[in-house]
Amino acid sequence: MSGINDNILRVRERMERACSRSGRGLDEVLLVAVSKTVPAARIQEALEAGLNHFGENYIQEAQKKIEELRRGAWHFIGHLQRNKARAAVKLFSMIETVDRLSLAEELNRQAREAGKVLEVLIQVNEAEEESKSGLPPEQVPALLEAGLSLPGLRIRGLMAIPPYDPDPESSRRWFRSLYQWREKWQNQFPSLDLSQLSMGMSHDFETAIEEGATLIRVGTALFGPRG
Image (cartoon, helix red, strand yellow):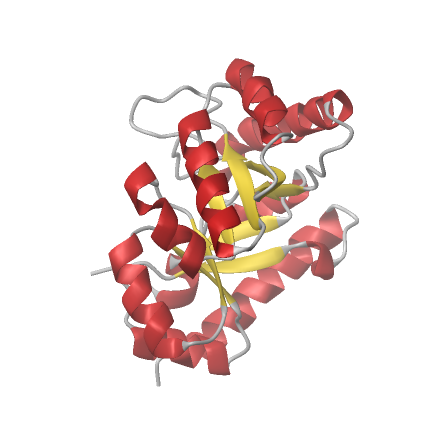
């Protein structure tokens, strides 16, 4: 047995307790299973166990799985190069890591050519870590404003990866501030729907839920440590 059913149950129990502590419903938080490096057979088990949303970091790896499985909703959660935009538009229902205008414009162009509206999140690098992608907060409004004139994209909210610390409480300040930025920018751009906040991973998603996450990206807690 792979244990995937037990892992899903444990994660959902953790989600439920975090929702209860924060006065939220479990249906307010979407579990995105991070499946990078996970073979298609294991993802198939997860699909059969009731998971439907999966996050991938690399286009080529994801394409093989998506074409083999032909099920599920797929989120791109890695750094996306412009020359991969066409493939990303074809493969994914959401791009969570839009971090520059040139990428947004190319995704818009490819989405319009494909006859679809692509859901995207703006990646925010709150701590301005050089090792991570994402815009510093002061640069986000310009991208949101530009997004108003990109009809192939539907900006749904924000995504962030806080500085890593094994203590989940260390992430709380970053999750809370992302929520506050979202509130500010939603007021600044009332015609946008910035209702989605993608934040929190295996070690800190409960804290993220308590601070307003609507999507959590969980890999290790579901599939086990990567080899």
